Length: 101
Image (cartoon, rainbow, N blue to C red; front, side, top):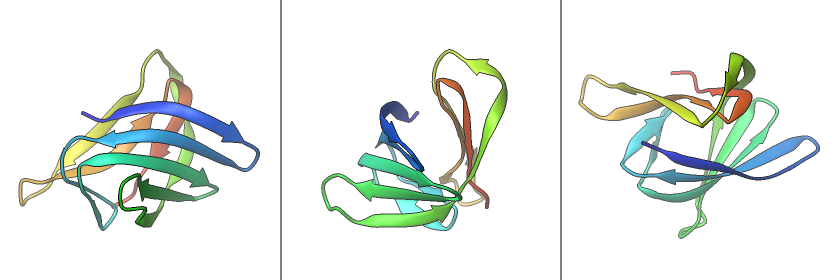
């Protein structure tokens, strides 16, 4: 399970603290376990590893949930190789981040 909390928001971009507990892919990139800053700017998400400062850039579709959620929800899909793929994050409230394949 991912641990996600809102860090801060400013006009045009939003940033979140994200803890990745296990190796997983997002779009075609591998995220190693660790703490990340997730910054969303328009249709692009940037995952920056807090330790290495390496950043990956992936497409994201920002939308709204049908109803507000009381806690952050994360959807992952198991890949044919047994690994996990991050598919969607629903943030506390009504913000939804979809990560295409």
